[in-house]
Length: 368
Ligand SMILES: *Cc1c(COP(=O)(O)O)cnc(C)c1O
Image 1 (cartoon, rainbow, N blue to C red):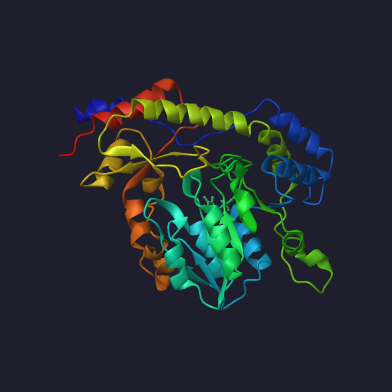
Image 2: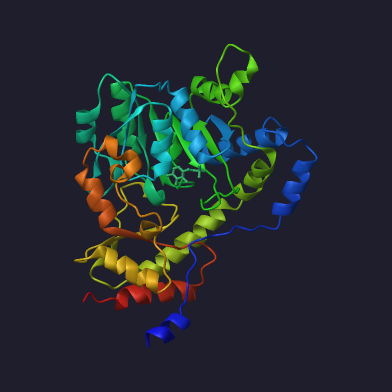
């Protein structure tokens, strides 16, 4: 019996490989224009990013992690400073903070989502706090508007890690409208994918200049320090051509998520409540779980070919990983959130049949 089910196992992929007719022609055109990070292909990409997201400045960067490093530098973070962030993000967000010699200080999330809890924020901010980072996980908009106000009042730069959040909006504006510096990744797994890559958006021209100079060795003037974090022309060319299909992709994700939710009947599984004014990009469909053993439910789905980011990355609060344990500051809301949720893939390569299979599996699940 078990053997048969293993043999007939259906596997839903959580990888979406975007592929568009003009991928190849865009790359070919870039080959004729110079391949470095200072080529016109990259400036064109930055112009396209400004157009799509609506920010005054876009700086193409070699990866999402590098974008966080550059943003921290631009915000003025130096060794010994403190950087406040929620512990529910991937290791990718905290390692750049540690690399700068700054101290990550964990602030709890709210009970019902990944926003910074503003009361807890007051407890952790000190005169050494040089930046606050918020990370809207799986593209779900957070209360970035309220955090922006709190950060401004405290005079602390707000960095948004929007690696999951291409196309997510709050009150009709890209989430990047609310950060002093907004960092994106275009790694292969992210909604806008160029293989490796990232970018920073900001409405502040001074911060934009600091980002640009730092990511170009300080323009090699021998006065201003910097490193090389430029994005090459080939991924930039792919980014420009794929950006045109982003809305179409998000619409397919929305339809899949809607189909799943319209068929969801299990009393212990419900969608996250989105905050008022939010539009989720459906990078993943996120579900809240109310089983006696939520991880067993996730394992059950995984055994039946439905992967979860929670399992794939062993999601837990960052201070529970050995490399970050020295910065432990218990955040009960964040722990409860990560222990009571899962993700469901809804990318455009999935068929209605795939969606129905996944929701059927969820509805049929019995604890025992
Ligand atoms: C992917 C990711 C990053 C890192 O981006 P890379 O392009 O892989 O360096 C940072 N933060 C979050 C939230 C991510 O998901």
